Each structure stands twice: as C-alpha cells, then as structure tokens.
Image: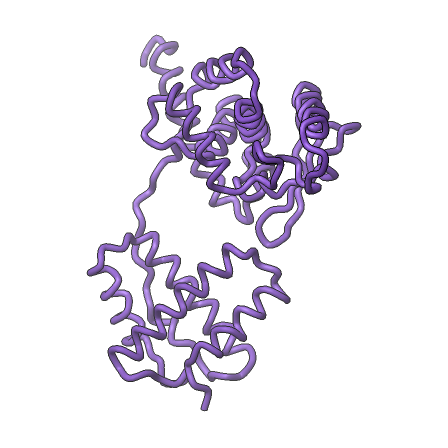
Length: 300
C-alpha cells in the first residue's frame, strides 16, 4: 500500500521537472500545495495512505482553507495541483482510482483584464524617451518598451537571452510555459533600441551573462528588480490601481484586439495553451464597439 508522504510528492515533482519540464516557479507552487495537504491530513486524521484518501478528506481541506480566507481562484489552483498529483499516481499504479472525481471546483467570477488606455501608453513612452539616461532609466525604458511591444510574461523577459533576438528578421524567440517556443515579430524601431541597449551594456560592464537584460550592477535581472522599476514608472503616469508588469501584457493584448487583430493570432503571440484564456480580451473590444455604436449610430 502506497503511503501518502513527502516522498510520494517528490516523485511527482521529479516527473514534472524531468519529463514535463515545468518551470521552477510552477514546481514550487505544486510542492507548496501538496505539502500543505499532507500536513493537514496528518494534523486532522493522523496521516493516510494514497488509496485511503477520499473526496471527503479533500473537501475538509478545502473548507479549512476557505475559512482562512483563501479566494476561489487560489482554491482552484490547489484542486488542480491535487488532480495532477493523483492522476500521476494513477498512471504509475500507486492507486486504482482518483478521489478527485467528486471534488467540484468553486466558481470564479469573471474579471476583465486591467489595461492602459492607448493615449496613456503613448504619453508613457514619450516621457521615457525624454528622461535623463542613467542605467536605471535605460532599464525602465527597455522593460516598458519590450513588455508593450511583445506582451511577454515577466519570467519570459528576464530570462530572455541575447541570441533569442533575431535582428535580421525583426523577431524574438520566446521560451514560454512548458518550454514551448513562440516567435513574436517586433518593429525595426524595437530592434534598434535593443541593439543600442546591448552596445551600452557591453561598454558599461566588462562581463555579463548571455541574458539580454541586466541590473545596474551588470547582473542578471531578477523579478523584484523588474517589478519595482515598472511599478514606479506606472505609479507616476497611470491612475490604475494595479501597476505590475502584467498590466503591460494585458495592454498589449487589448490594444491588438481593439485594432482588429485575429483572436487566434493574439493567442499565439501571448503563448496561451487554449483560446479560452485569450477570449477574456474580447470583452474589452465589445465595450469599445458599444461606445462606437452609441456615438455613431443614428438610432443608438
């Protein structure tokens, strides 16, 4: 009988790491969720074998988490972690059935993506072009420029290698979730901005990693550094409540959709695995169409 222990979690994580090639961030999320579940079972029920875990145990854990104030979105992520975990152990024969069949995910209210208006984005870029250049303002300009031009995720951009920029064809090869590659076209203007950044980087720092973006110390850029730069500049130019790098990804997608871009094309550019993830941006487009109809149609 297979015992539900930290070792059973580790074998699952090894599978995700070496066979599915999941990112460190994703592996950490799975590990946190599963260890928390095991600790709950040990506290409440004195532990359990894999085969003895049933839907009531899982519902008790979810109820416990809900009492702690966790959102439906977070609970769904934890349910997803358990589903993958038990599916793996079903596959390798540790269990004969998964207990997740009777676990219902809580409904999540639809939230429209927060994005910047086109005129605000234009003002932001003009302000960055006029700023006095030291290394931090140069990094801020590059972050904002590439985020808005490509719609990349933060993790994708800070891990972007110099060799992933194809200067001759004006495109960037991005390594996304699940190590899936995608090509994002960029303008000649963006290519030249990146080329200038590389020249300045080599002049400023004798030796750097092969990553494109570095800190003002010449080291590989890390998430908090990039987040604070973007947060600071958006705080001075935007009235949005949220001021994270992800806002620029939402802005990229929304502006494309509002300009008539094909939904499937936007899906490919964003690196979404399903069209459902991209469809949320159509809501913003519909709102724009309503405004156009209201202001232009004689019977509106």
